[in-house]
Length: 334
Ligand code: SF4
Image (tube, rainbow, N blue to C red; front, side):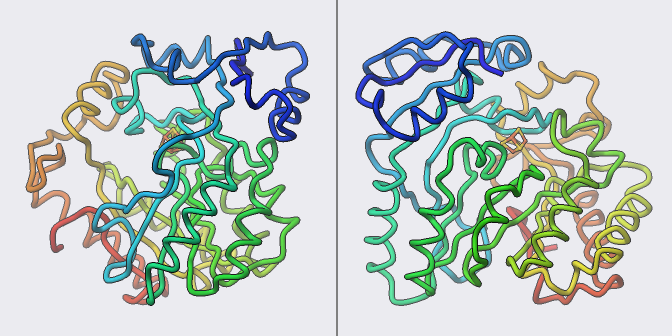
């Protein structure tokens, strides 16, 4: 899985580091002082992750919990994200990480107790409901069977019912979640695209069916769920594609149980758009022209993306979603 593992020396005896190393007994391990003396110091092209991916095991210094941008989640409530990893084993063609870091190498931060201490302070600073999001810079569940931090977060959220955790994923890896008693304030949110689109652009991720089946298992166990229909990418068959996706959700009786469903049309910063064009020149993402739009992001034109959002929203409502479940992500009014 990894070409090399780089391990910060102060973590050599850390039980979670020991566990990670035990999973890769044949991978060479290099002791280092600090991950950021090496990681991202030189430009490593994004697609090198296919052939030569390194893992850094590290401790995150500095601010661990950060205020999330507006429109990150449900409006009117404070949102924060926390940093427990950098980069991802999957390869979605639109992934913003390809223009964000200098390298696709993964970093797993082990100091979850420090993250939880910052969360505790953040909760105390608010009298209202407050949200924490995992998965800003990595997938929340893809490696969770190796990293083992989920029980710590469940313990924290059990004690703070006014704090909400969103575990955002494109994985179907629910092994660890299934071992934990569900909490009303811990929501696993799955990013979904129609099957044909997902096969073409969500490279190396579990299939749509795999994700939906995992959702069904979690629902039956009582876990709280949500979905992100984001990014929506234009196809000539958009209506049929989303009808199929909603039919699959309906078949598994998932729709009414969803806490929320976000809708967002594909968008990029200029840097990420440049990387996507370079890395995936033949991607279906480029079949429609994009413009520089209202928040300086690169998107489809206003007419097209609002047609797409309204079409998917209309279909969702026809399939039994309520308007309270649906919200638009990073979009001006549709
Ligand atoms: S799952 Fe998320 S973080 Fe991972 S490659 Fe896809 S978009 Fe990027």
